[in-house]
Amino acid sequence: MVVKEKRGRKRYILFECSGNFNRNEIDRIILREINPLKSKIRCKLITFNGKRGILLVGHNLLEESRRIMNKKEEISTIASSGTLKGLSKY
Image (cartoon, rainbow, N blue to C red; front, side, top):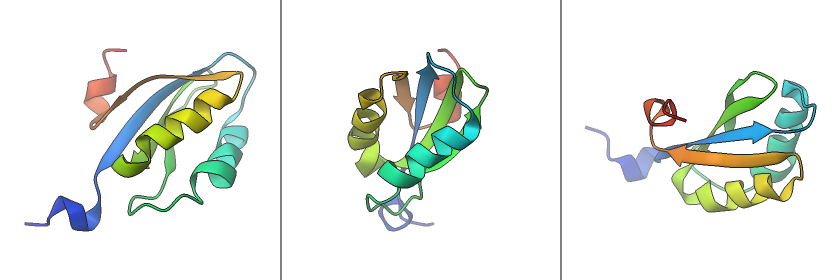
């Protein structure tokens, strides 16, 4: 059994875009602002359909990642969860 502290715990952030974004623009925000923060889990865009998306981050970067995303005028975070299934109700 692998101890979660060694491999890192994941958190998923559900966000919504009010502006006109594409996947590349969201990836650029992640690469420039969230990836430089240190975590065992590498930040990654799971899904994005042009309006809503899910971002994977390490549990220790959850609050900082939400703050960075909410700082952008056109992006707002809706919810966060430890599982993808937990976000399905939103």
